Image 1 (cartoon, rainbow, N blue to C red):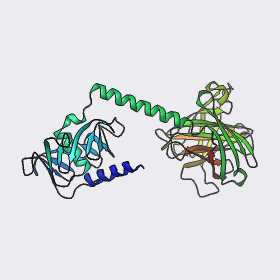
Image 2 (image 1 turned 180 degrees about the vertical axis):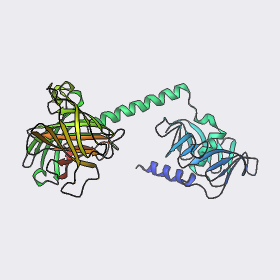
Image 3 (image 1 turned 180 degrees about the horizontal axis):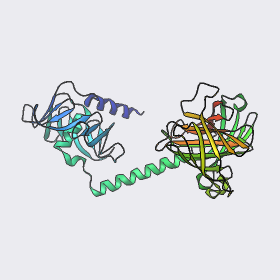
Image 4 (image 1 turned 60 degrees about the vertical axis):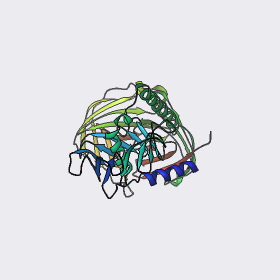
Length: 391
C-alpha cells in the first residue's frame, strides 16, 4: 500500500470509527443549537423517543429492522446495494462522488461543510461512526446520493469496462501451460499440463506427468468464489464427462466426449435418469443417447454414496456409479460439488481404460490457478498443484 493511501486510511479511521458509538449522537444546526437528528446506536430518530427514521444494520441502512435496504456501505464506497454502482466515496475528511472526483462535502472535526472554509451546514454532537454519518446525510442531504443521468451513465460504463477487463483477465487463468509442483499421487508429482479452450468453450487438457501421460475434457461452471472447470481425464483420453442437474430423484445430464473440445456441442450425448432422491439406489434410464451421434439406449444406473480410501472430501459428496446394459456393466465415479451455486450438480466420469478420474480445476485467486482436485475410479482422492509458466 502506498504511503498516501496509508495516511488516508488512518485519517478515515480516526475520523469515522467503524464501530457504532457507545453514546447517543445528535446532529444539530449549531453547537448547542436545535437538534435535527438523534442517533442512538442503530436507530436514527428526530428525538430520543421519536419515530424511527432509519435502522443501521451493520453495513446496510434500512427503513426498519429486517426492512428494505436503502443504502449499502462498502468500505469507503456508498452503494444502493452490495453490487450497485457507487453513489459516494468517503475520502478521509471529504465526501466525493468517486475517488479523486469533485468534493461534495467536507467533514471538519465536528462540522459538516461544503468546503473547508465555508459555512457550517451541520454540527455533530458526539462520536459518530461511518455508518451513522451516512445515515444522517441520507436524511439531511438526500441529493448527495442521487446521480445525474450523465453521472449514472459514466459510472455504469466504467463498471462495464472493469467487468470486461476482469473477465478477460480471468479467462486466461486456467488456459496455458503449467508446471506441476506436487501431487498426492507420487506418479503425478512432476510434469507439464497444457490446457486449451476449444470449440463451444470446452477445455482440452494434455497432462504429461511424471510417469503417466493423460488427456482430459472440461466444462466451465460457476464456483464458490471464482469460476472453475469440471473435468474428467484418463490415459489416451479414453474418458467422457457427464454433468447432471439434480431435481429430486430426476437427473438430467449431458455426456461430453473428449473430442467435444474440437468438434463442439453437436457431439454431446444425453441422459435422463429417474430414481431415489437421496442418490442411493437404482435409477432407470428414461432417455439416453450416446455421444458422437450415437444410438439411443436404455438400461439402469446404480448410484451409491461412496467412502473413498481416505477420510472423505470437503469439496465433494462422492458416489460410485455403474451403468448396466443387459450383461454389460460400465463403472464410473461421480461427485456432487458442495459449493455449486443454484441447482445441485452431479459430475460423473466413465472410461474404457483402467484409470480415469473426475474433478475440478479451481483458482486460488481471480488471477492464479490452483490446480486439480480429483477422485479416481479406484477411490483415491487427491490433488495436483501447478503454477503457470511465464508467457
